[in-house]
Length: 120
Image 1 (cartoon, one colour):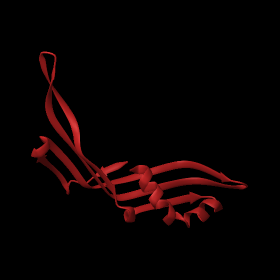
Image 2 (cartoon, rainbow, N blue to C red):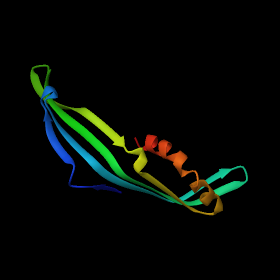
Image 3 (cartoon, rainbow, N blue to C red):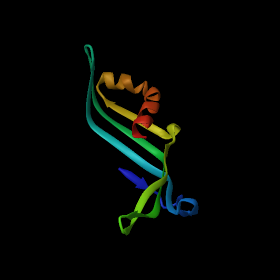
Image 4 (cartoon, one colour):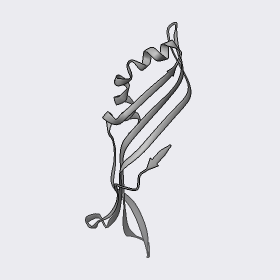
């Protein structure tokens, strides 16, 4: 589930690329996993997890142009100024389940970088 805040949303022109850029600096996301199972040798961790991110920056621009195809001139649109940034210090990972899941939750701080890279 993604939630957009109405503040910190900008739409502005990029005249160098003949583009319109849209930027949202405070997008929030909550990702749920209702049932996971992870086994390492005789240990099996079962449960569910939540990843809560409160600060995601998403930016993209649409550049407009034309191209000649034969004797026709056709419009085309390309993407410019594309950027996604996740604040790694604003990620909250919660793991619930059996005793091994509780043990894994002690190491959540080490998972944050991997989760941010996977989402990016």
